[in-house]
Length: 248
Image (tube, rainbow, N blue to C red; front, top):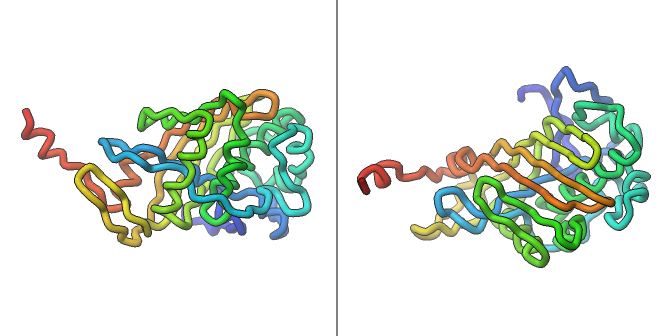
């Protein structure tokens, strides 16, 4: 997008789609909107190990220090999102119920604690229900329980500045659907079946679709669809199609 974006302290941006109204926020209100690099887990074409973000850190809340989001209670999460903050988000429907706003706050918090410079693995895991699951749909991997914490660290090793460009957010009861781009700089080594791929400093911008399913203020299922082909292409990793053809 060529339109000038207003970046937050969380390095996440929101869409400037003219069909989606937004208002300017004061800087402290924008601290909440950051998110989602959330993501890569295992790679397409046998490149495995990609995940969400990095090691735990003391992260500010995704909304603002003056109105922190806690994952323990839906009512607390709802209280943290002000009308002004909601107006800055690229929502497809602005007539949300209190329950939907509470769910949205939980998801925003999960994105925030997976950002490159505000990582908090425990907070991310605590966003999920006891039997909650994170599905990397493209890679065909599922993570539950303690494994949820394992998917977080690797991404930030590859892209220390990882963040998400939120383009469209749809809230429908306990389901939240988000169109976004995972962005970052390839600054960490990538382990592949053929050996270690050295970082190049290349900029990555991978189209992604996320689907969150919540119940009682917790994430029961998170389905993430990452555009790995575009991601690896940006990193300079090109699949050896000729080799595959020659096998037959």
